[in-house]
Length: 262
Length: 215
Image 1 (cartoon, chains in turn orange, yellow):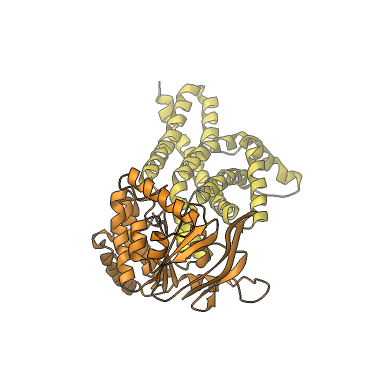
Image 2 (cartoon, rainbow over the protein chains, first blue to last red; image 1 turned 90 degrees about the vertical axis):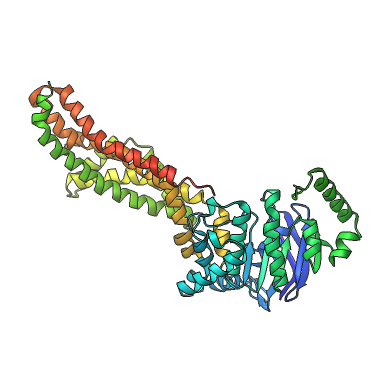
């Protein structure tokens, strides 16, 4: 489904992603962990080309992301890039709902104005999706009236409304109060059960263990370890990962249930 | 004491009509130019932004009265024939435009970047993002300031009386010369300006509260 080959991305002199290669199979749930600044979020943003990259290539179902294949790194036309993004759903750490639109309008924006679906059908499906994420009673509310957990579930529904082939989750619970984290994670679990292909960047280790078919540990822009949840989270091979996980456990214990290590 | 004001009120109100008609035309025109320039400055090519910045800073560095004198004397000196009110009104619009440009630019840039990220992530493209996501939010952010700016510009129309254009303040000076009752007449003029500007200030305050949602 997703194939990434030798991906390289820098901000000025700073190499954020350094020769990153991996692939994600259809229906697979890939969890990416790592310290802040290790390149995880940048990786996700490269996959739907919200971020340009300097080297390597990304393929989604065989179609190249951002640049035409071959020499010269010719940028693909905007229309092509936008079309590709409709197949890749993204959920953001800070929700990024459109504050001037109702929940329903947030969810139908893509289907109606990008895919040109008739409004009644798009609204019908949006209602179904909102019901699925437990927000059937909030369709006409504005985002500012919702809790963080509710906003994030709208964010998920908005992405799903495009019927994406892949979903990208960028630390989607990091901005939430601890008691709101579970309502969002349970929606993501449901998606995994439905067989959605997903790449999830998270600091929720228990959740990662639960949901991941495979885990990547990022360190300084490189994949430092990769394997099943069991291999990576329970039997770390490198010192970096060991210290990352132990720092993690300590923070989680001290904060007594606080789910964010930052 | 205020009999003199009451007997001259119809004449003053005629001047007021002229004032607010002028303000409506030229301040609206200037605001439209400003919204356009502000959008271009925030989203357009860099060289366009640079030109607009020059315009904004040049106009802002000149007192509006000086700008009006220039607009009044320049066309005849250059051999261009145009009605005074167009030249001076143009100056008023240009002045309004420079402030509205900055208000618009600032409010577009203060829409968080996550908004266009989210729009792009569902496949939206530049013009649609601007029209459906960025501008509606920017307009809500800028509306109170735009109304406020209109209030300032309505009051600035009083300057045009100094280049001989007849409106409320000019009419007042005529009446004062005739009646020798400056305090009474200008008190009335003050109330007329206030009657229009105060509701607009309230509107601005109301809009500010209405759109004070958190991002």
